[in-house]
Length: 218
Length: 218
DNA sequence: GACTCGTGTTACCGCAAGTAACATGCACGT
DNA sequence: ACGTGCATGTTACTTGCGGTAACACGAGTC
Image (cartoon, rainbow over all chains, first blue to last red; front, side, top):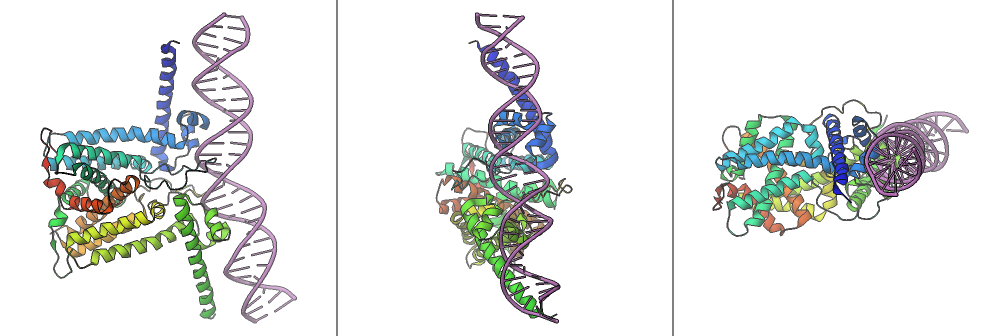
C-alpha cells in the first residue's frame, strides 16, 4: 500500500473541502447565521448530501467554519497582544483588533457566537438531559482560554495566579464581546472611545471613582 | 357596551395565560432552550394553536417567559445593588446573586441567553437583510442598561459619565455572563472564589500586577 | 331558537436537517 | 480490454418543527 495515492486523494478532498468552506463563508456573509444547508450547497454548485459527507452534520460545518475564522482572529489578537509596547497600549490594541473584526464582518461573528444549538438530530433521544453549561460559543471559549494563558504566562499576581488568570481571561473576553455587541447595535460612540472606556474599566477606574453627591453611594 | 363583562373575559384570559406560562416554564426547565411548542402545549394539556392565539408566535412566548424571569432576576440584582454596604461589598453581592441564579436554574438561563433567532417565519421574505447587532439576549441588554443607569446615577467620573456608564454597564454584565457560563460548565472553583476574582478584576488588579520575570511583560 | 364569541380540536402547509439508494467517472490489478 | 473499488454526484424521501386554516363545542345574549 503506497501512501502517495492516498495522499493524492486526501489532498483533493482537502481542496474540495476548502472550496466548500469558502462557499459556505460567502453564504453566511450574505444570509447570516440562519444560512441553510441547501443554500450553502447551492452556492457551492452542488447538493446537500455532499456537504454531509464532508462535514457530518451542520454542527460539523459550523465547527470547521468557526475554526477558520477563530484561528484568523486569534492570530490577529495574539499579534496585538505580543506587540512591543506598554501593557495598557497592548490591551487597547487587542480590544480594537477584536472590535474592528466584528465591525467588518458582523454577520460572520453573529454566526460564530452561537453554540451548535441546532443539535436536534432526528434519531437522537439520549443525551438531551443535563449537559448544562458550554452553551456559549466555541469562539468565546477559545478566546477566553487563550487570554487566560497569556495572562498566566506574563503576569505575576502571587499565589493562585492560574485560577485567577482563567477567570480573568473569560471575564475580559465576555466584557469585550458584550460591549462590542451592544456597540455594534447602537453605535453610540466611536470605536476608539469604546476601547478607551473598556480599558479604563479594566484599569480600575470604576473602583476609584467617587460617589455622586446625594445618593447612597456606589 | 359594559366593561365588566370584558374585564371578566380579560381576567380569565390573563389567568389562562399565566397557567400557560407556568407550563412553559416547567418544560423549559426540563428540556432546555430547544423546548418545542408541541411539548409546551402538551404539558399545558392543550394543543399548539391555543398557544399561538395567546402569544402570537414562539418569539412572543419567549418574550413573555423571558420577561418574567428577567424581572425577577433584575429585582434581586437591584436589591443587592441597593444594600447598605461599601461599594466593593455591593458589587460582590450582586455578582453572587447573578451566579446563584444561573446555578440554580441553568436550563432557564440558557434559554434566556438566546436571541429570538428562530425568526424564520414561512411567509417572511423581506427584512432578513442587515439587522446586524442586537444578536445578544434581551436579558443581557436589560441588565446592561440597568447597571448603566445605576452607575450613572451614583458615580461621578467627571465629563462623559453617561457614555462611560453605558459602556461599563454592558461590559460588566458581559464579563459576569461569560465568566458565569464558563464557570457553570467547568466548575473550576467555588462561587465565592469566582466572585472575588471578578471583583478583583474590576478593582484594577490586572493593571497593578507586576510582570513575570523573563517574559516581554504584559 | 338563532347569534356570537372564546376555547378547543384535527389536519394541513412549508421548510430545514438529515438519510437512503441509485448513478457516474476515474484509477487500479489481472 | 474488463471488472472492481471508490469518491463524487444525484434525486427522492423521512422526520420534526413552526405556523395556520377550518371546523366543533359550550356558555352567555337578544
